[in-house]
Image 1 (tube, rainbow, N blue to C red):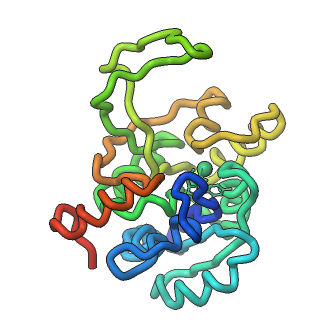
Image 2 (cartoon, helix red, strand yellow; image 1 turned 180 degrees about the vertical axis):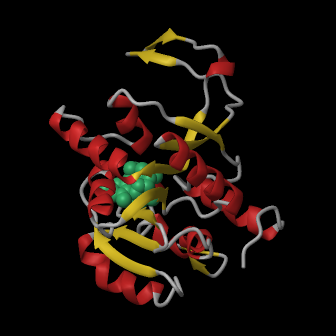
Length: 234
Ligand code: CTP
Ligand code: MG
C-alpha cells in the first residue's frame, strides 16, 4: 500500500492584523482565494496522498463549497480548528488517517510555496523526524528584555522560520501531547513543539518568496509578485 503522506493546511485564524472584512486566507488574490493558492502545490504533488484543511468551525460547510474538488485523486477533508494556531494544528494532526506516516503542515496565509521546498521538507522529515523551511534574515535579529535589547545573536546563526514544516506522524503527535502536558498552549510554530521535547529539527533552505500575508502591505506585495511574473501561478 502507498505510504500515507498528509498535508495539513492551517486556515482557522481570524487575520486580526490584516484588518479586512474576512480572514486573509479567504481574500481574493489574482482571482482566487489565498487558501486555494496555498493548497494547490500540495494538491498537485504526487508524494502527498491526503489533504486536511483546518478552518473555523462555523466555516467548515462554506469552505467545503469553496474548495470543491480541489484535490483530484486525493482524500481531502475539512475539519474545525481551535482558538490558537497550536490548537488548530493539533486538531489537524488528530484528524489524519490512522496509517499516516508523514505530515507536512503549512499556513494557509502563505500562497507561494514552491514544489521544491515541499519535496525537500518531506525528505528531511522522513530522514530526521522533523524539519522546517528556514530563510536567511537580512536584518539583524535582537532578543528583547522589556523595552531594552537583551542580546544580539550573530546574524549568521539566525534565520526566519517558515512553513511548510514536516514530521514523522508519531513525532508531531507526541510533541503536541507533551506541549499540553507541560502547559505550552500558544506556540506559533510546530517545529518549536518538537524542539521543546528535546528532539532535533532539521533546517531546510526555504524560499524568500514564500511570504506570509500578515498585513495590507504584504497583500500589495503578493499582488505585485504575481503581476510581474516573479511567482508563477496556474
Ligand atoms: N491559524 C489557525 N488557527 C488559529 C490561528 C491561526 O489555523 N487559531 C492559522 C492561520 O489561518 C494562518 C497560520 O495559522 O494560516 C499563521 O497564523 P497567522 O499568520 O498569525 O494568522 P492569523 O492568526 O489569522 O492572523 P492574526 O494573528 O493577525 O490574527
Ligand atoms: Mg495569529
